[in-house]
Amino acid sequence: MPCYIYIMIKRTLSLKLSSTAKKFPAIALTGPRQSGKTTLVRETFPKKPYVLLEDPDTREFAEKDPRGFLDQYPHGAILDEVQRVPAIFSYLQGILDNAKIPGLFILTGSHNFLLMEQITQSLAGRVALLSLLPLSWKELSDSHHAFTSFEEHLFHGGYPRIYADHLNPKDLYANYVRTYIDRDIRLLKNVHNLSTFQTFLKLCANRVGQLLNLSSLADECGITHNTAKSWISVLESSYIIFLLRPHYNNLNKRLIKTPKIYFYDTGLASYLMGIKNKDTLTQHPLKGNLFECFIISEIVKSRFNQGDDPGVWFWQDKLGREIDCIMEKETSVIPIEIKSGKTISEDYFKNITYWCKLSKYPPEKAKIVYGGDTSQNRSTAHVLGWKKFLSSNI
Image 1 (cartoon, rainbow, N blue to C red):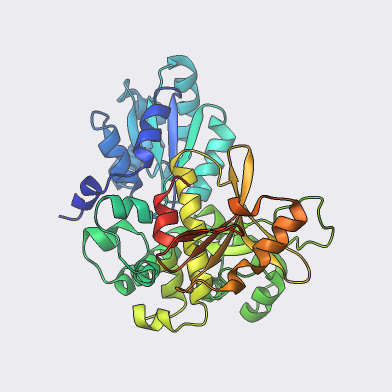
Image 2: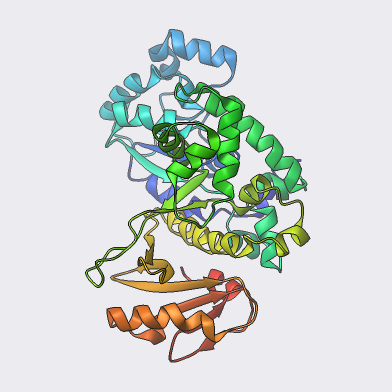
């Protein structure tokens, strides 16, 4: 029974979803395909009728008579894949304005770029936006499904069906990529060559944790610079990748201004990189980049689960000195260095020490997250094993 895992693994976002439904007339839940959106909303709002607009008969009714279709649900409903019927949004606007009932309609969809386009045009200010990403390590850990080694987690990733159906990650991600390209990307007018787009996706995975170089991506794919820029936006809007922006301050004028590219899920990135198993990953030259992606994406998941903006950046000057992550925390920021090594090395402290001196930041408040288990409160930084960091309130 493929859905039992969602009952066993409580999604952190469910609390924010429930509380938000008491304040807004509608909620749109976005996120990558197969992240568990449908299951979450059906469990959170079990008394609401569930309507799948991918069903041909249902979609035909909604397209030909949107008013009559919505009249069937005077107390609201869950409308899944709602972007498949664009005409419905104009009618929803009037219903939401007149009803003034919180949590009336819950909207979800896999084509996030199309869904957000319709919301922006017709429902701006009426809909609360929340995002559900794949399972976080903490969600898996709290339900006793987490792996003890970070290499296993990097390889498996957090897509729920891996744990629900006990799937081999390779099988799931192969199908995921085919589904994503065939069902989502095919609908976009600015993506004509699906094979080239898949190559582009793999090239992005092999650049995880690196500065985004659109010219290099374009040259290797045989596409224009503008096409590469457009395709990056497609990957962003469908929650495959996110761009980590540089953190600006007045300390140093010679700072890198280019963003870095990361994947929301390391399992998907590992598959696209051609990593076959955990042992292959352990020896892979980009293992450190994937570990960095893992830690930063976990911070982003934590923030999204609270309904907040990610609040993370990186810092790098043109001499190559960098801080992997600058994390916003309440009214301050916390510099975080991320190292996949399992033994604490003095080299870990070099960039943190430089940045703290430059910014006059208390070094004992800086953090180093590494691949080991021992934590140390040093005067030069607070060293945390990866599990200890991810278990904390980030």
